[in-house]
Structures are given as structure tokens and as C-alpha cells.
Amino acid sequence: MRIEIRGVIDYGNYQSERMVFDVVCDCNLCKYNLNTNTNHSYSFPAIIGKEGDVIVLYTQQGNDYQIKEKDHTIYYLYWNQNDCIWNKNIYAQLEYKAKINK
Image (tube, rainbow, N blue to C red):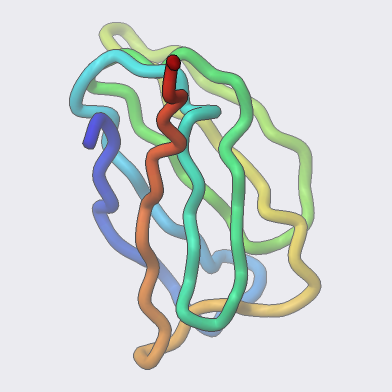
């Protein structure tokens, strides 16, 4: 996996609930989906993540943006949900969408 889940922060607080990911190897994020056991799914946009970058995925509504730091970029993404998703009974899984060439 080229991105890893760091964890969920402020679950249950709609204004700040977010999941944080680390990019551990250069990759195109659009090849990944985030799925929960409650049938929520998020498809990452076409962003070329570089090793050391950080992805912050907010549950709330908003517009995606990024901040370039000295040696990495922090991507702030928005799931645009109307309510909180996370609690202690919810789990998530990253899915890599591999293209199979025949």
C-alpha cells in the first residue's frame, strides 16, 4: 500500500472530524477508495502524492485545497457528508483499484 491510514481525529464532532493518511511511496491517489463497514465510500481525486505527503480527509462539506511545506504537501480533502461518519464501531479499509491488462 502506498498510502497508510494514520487514524481518525475528533470523531463525532462534525466540524473537525477527519481521517489522516500518510503517503509512504509516490502514487496517484485516484487509484484508491476508502470504504467503511457502514457502506460509506470515498474515491480519492487525481492527485500525485509524493513520499512524505499528508492527506487530511474531513467528513464535512468544503472545498479541497493543499498547502506546500518545505519538504512535503498537506492535502485537505472534503468528503461532503451531511453528518459524522466515525465512531468506535466503524472501521475503514483502503482499497487499491488495480488496472488489469489483458
